[in-house]
Length: 529
Image 1 (cartoon, rainbow, N blue to C red):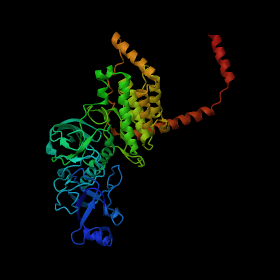
Image 2 (cartoon, rainbow, N blue to C red; image 1 turned 60 degrees about the vertical axis):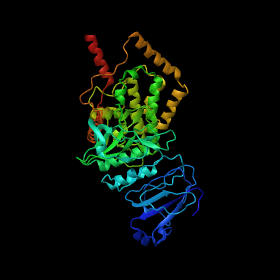
Image 3 (cartoon, rainbow, N blue to C red; image 1 turned 90 degrees about the vertical axis):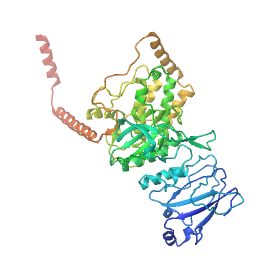
Image 4 (spheres, rainbow, N blue to C red; image 1 turned 135 degrees about the horizontal axis):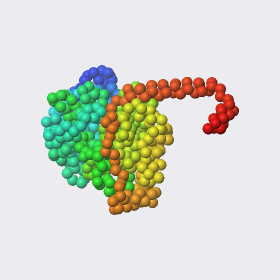
């Protein structure tokens, strides 16, 4: 095996080597010595001393296992993640270019990354399963996989010891668990210089801790973990740093970026009231871009509402508005009809409320409600209970009233987003492009300028500006909750009402009325008066 560039030597330690030899008649391991299983690997990478544990499923690989240096200029993950894998530890030590011999050390690991643009990989304490464990093999496997597959310094996950998080304070309860905040003493890794070749810890990092209720971690925790990893490499999704475990309750927690406020709180700030339409469109484009990233992965979010749209630091990747809570993120080809339905009723698409399959179009419907919220600065349907009757009304076409001073192009896009027919709604990619035209190409600029001038005139003249409602109905719920029972109740009410209407229609059609007789009777009554 030959290749240009420096060489790395590897010592492979295989678990169940003899079993695999027997299973494949020795062919899968024919690159290894029969005595010490040693192998020399050549690679073009000479930029880093890289460390990595490789997880792969030996049973899924065609024998012999292809060990070739990558010639592609675009970095690609070496392996595809498969659950319940056998471990293969690849130990590398950097060697001079003239010494293509085996490393004497088997305690360190290295990666043969084909591109210097690939991010520095985790340290031995991050990847070595002999020094840390989550207590769950699936979680361990997935953390290590993210460190293998990571293309950026921010996109891999870490195991974070619970004792390294200080000042933990409860914030709120959500649909699946609770959210707390704390200080990650060590902090995430961040480039020490502009070229991203050296990382250092940013100590004292404020983080949010998402705790799942007992019994929910196996179903929800790993799903959300995988969804975050798949979607966070381009920004616009709230960053997830890793996982920890509360030793008192044995519950797993996601360690995430701490957001100062959600969208509803942001819309009440003075900065938002004073902002021009262009700034509002920029924020909406960031949300649309987050949905675009999720949908590009062939996922749907499934729980978009203003409580899951978070405002973070402007120094984070992407922008200042981020989509959070990917717990209900699922593949679009998954059959969701048998899944429990969670959500916030005013943001839930009518097809979901009628028991149909969930998909990307449901996220667009919720985005339409968020567009309305940007314009109205109110919570949708805040003045009424969120019950079966509201579900019926939404399915029958009820929507919040759109403010009269909204630009007509904005109104038209909003109405398209919350259309009753999912096929009539725009895609996230179309939304992203429409906002780009409005912001950067001055399309419909005159409409937004007139709206800005009206708002400015009201502010300067002391005239009342549209203010958000303060009173919220006590039965209005703006956090995710199970909707299955209410949806069934609404369906029964609709069915009973339809049956009653059918009876009335049949009964009325059987009545015989002499129109002339009625007319004569009315004329007689009028004459007598």
